[in-house]
Length: 219
Length: 248
Picture 1 (cartoon, each protein chain N blue to C red):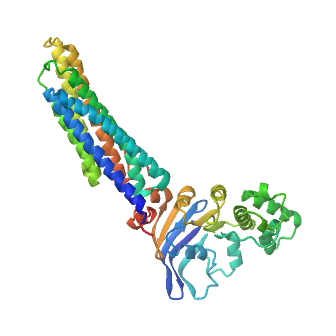
Picture 2 (cartoon, chains in turn yellow, green; picture 1 turned 30 degrees about the horizontal axis):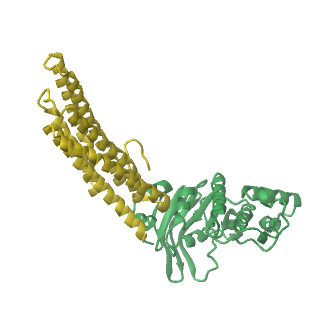
């Protein structure tokens, strides 16, 4: 038995789960802050991003250390290489959450130009996608990982609806606050990107379970 | 296939060392045998040129074909060992000059002509990537060379009789990393001309140089396949556990 190695792999697993929970916490706070125009919560979400960045660096260091010193193979190699790829997407999700919260703070002193309808709907889907991607990793659940990939279409559809709504508002002269329309569009785009990153994570979860990745028959 | 091993059982007296193994070994490829000590991999390797024949109580069931001919039906073991050479774990040059070490095999097979022997010695030493280090010391004792050089001299000695297959039993386990790298580079070059089978305890070595890997345990072949596949996505749980160091 390679006791130290087994412990390190276990630690990597736990660290990824912790980073996943940190993401859930951040996005949930981001969405709540946006819906309620809650500046305090938005600031908390931004602070969480720094924690996510730190976690990414720790996990990256651990993975490189494992590759250098332990030469993992088979399932261990797939776990370590997937982890290196996954944390990049996880870190980006943290960034985008922070970007959304920045906009929430920016818009906090003005009423929304329309009742938020499709943006929260797409936000909830992306929260589910991120949660499910992390859960699929924890439980090595192929079906759940695959379902995350399927959910991206729902997010994309909502994104188109948000865009159409905002275009209509401007075209029909229903708002003179075009700046906010652009900011809301940006928020929708950030959620759409979070969905894409969740898909990437799910794809690497699938790789770590099956050894197959969509772009190449890696092995 | 260069070797076709089918339904082979090997015994040392009552001890069942290899159990019902079937395996094809392709030409111009490096095949690695891996597995815990005592799993039968060296026994199987040595059977491929009948090195086990003289061990008391050793017996073979099943069929081992070399280019379609049963190696146990053909009585000429010397010819078999000319075609299927072997390099051992510990470098074992004969206590004589480098030249005589390399010329030993060809002389045994009846070559006497000095110019032809010179040619064979030079060609073999070049093939084994030891010519530059040895060319000015051909008359010196092979034992005066370092371990890594001695092992390359032994490989040259094996190549001198123009074999078709090279069997290697942990050829670098007694060598430092630089000599190991030199031997590994050499094996990769030799792959184009020969069929190579290597027993190794060094997983990284199997990964670095072999095309196919067979994993043995308790006399059984647990898994055989492309090296890249076996080390990234093994089919069998036992393989995964062994190569990831969870047992063995």
